[in-house]
Image 1 (spheres, rainbow, N blue to C red):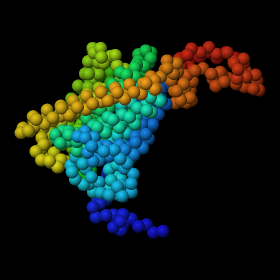
Image 2 (cartoon, rainbow, N blue to C red):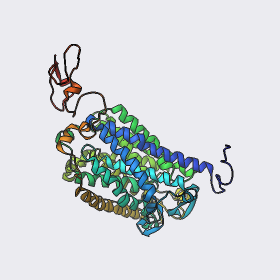
Image 3 (cartoon, rainbow, N blue to C red):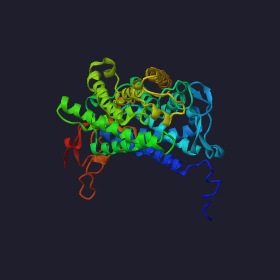
Image 4 (cartoon, rainbow, N blue to C red):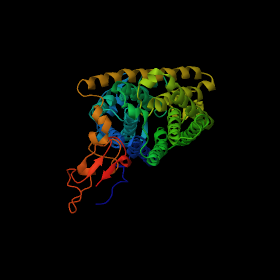
Amino acid sequence: MAYNGTDGTAVPTWLNKGDNTWQMVAATLVGMQSMPGLVILYGSIVKKKWAVNSAFMALYAFAAVLICWVTWGYKMSFGDQLLPIWGKAGPALGQNYLVSQAIIPAAKASAMFPMASMVYFQFVFAAITLILLAGSVLGRMNIKAWMAFVPLWLTFSYTIGAFSLWGGGFLAQWDVIDYSGGYVIHVSAGIAGFTAAFWVGPRLKQDRERFPPNNVLLMLAGAGLLWMGWAGFNGGDPYAANIDSSMAVLNTNICAAASLLVWTCLDVIFFGKPSVIGAVQGMITGLVCITPAAGVVQGWAAIVMGVLSGSIPWFTMMVLHKKSKLLQMVDDTLGVFHTHAVAGVLGGALTGLFAEPALCNLYFSQSGLRGAFYGGSGGVQFLKQLAGAGFIIGWNVVVTTIILLVIRLVIPLRMSDEQLLIGDDAVHGEEAYALWGDGEKYDISKHGWYDDTTGHGDGTGQGARATIELGKPARGATMEL
């Protein structure tokens, strides 16, 4: 059968192959930030006994969000208006719908690629939001409660922010600038994660006091996928392979690099040594901060934003956190509040200062948008940015609380103390590494020496005596034959 991909049916006159190619590549890059990026990052940055559970929370969310997204979520975020904050639910699965020309609701314009590319591109943003949120509750949230939480939060929280800012809702009509998800994704994930951490409750005391990464090198590999994937995260949002996309990609990398360096320098100045985990956190805060502004600020502004995103979240995490009773009471496992909520609000506010008029005209259909540093209506824009952040914060606190309280009626939000003591072996019956160690139950049939030819062991423990202290690494075991 001959390939028929060049006629007018498969290549309509409105299709730009370059734009469509870039949109699918950008979507794939963002997808790889989650799969395998955050799966690897989460699985390696936590204690060994939580590696499987943490990675699986990300894996599950990615799959669950996709089915919810194409079934009802996309149109609630980008479909016809139901309320000023919400679109009408409906499936995005029909052939005629998916092969039609994509619509950009906030711009009231059409893109030069099909709806199928648009639906997938927006899905990977929705998925990574839930996965980022999960970072706040790693190491203790009941996996069954998480399985219920994902579709509910996507439906009642994420779609609200997405429609309000990107789908033509009231924040879009107010001209609040969120270039690629500083508010929709990062502030939402940070605030909802912090709220979820409050309701789920803390990890065990020993886990809060000592929670070392089980593999720093793999953690860096996951962080590297996250950084490189951000080229699609911010570069794909002009919905075209154009000069604004190029500006967004360059600014993204500039801000991330500056933020990482500032965070590392602060670690050296105040703690005497550079921290690899700190460098990753600085990288993330830089990427988050530039996201609402990526294609509408100049390169010098990206450096300034990097300096501020490497220092202000560092201050809230390293100084303010230790002085605040609320921040200390809530066990935010990976500090998502600081790296995403604080950095996201900071980025949105700085967008209201640094948004450059000519660059805004490249991206937005409406003219006249500018930051406060450029005079005119810039001061009002700054206030609009703060108001937009306030709405996203308030909505996520309230809705996340309601969702978790409803789930708590039927499913415990926190694992049992026994599961928390043991970890992956109790929750999944699986281990990250084929080594006996922290958190695993001692099972003589698995860990005893068994040799049916010499009688050293018979699987019952009669041929071997072991002295094992629960929760200690294998080095602490004394095997006596």
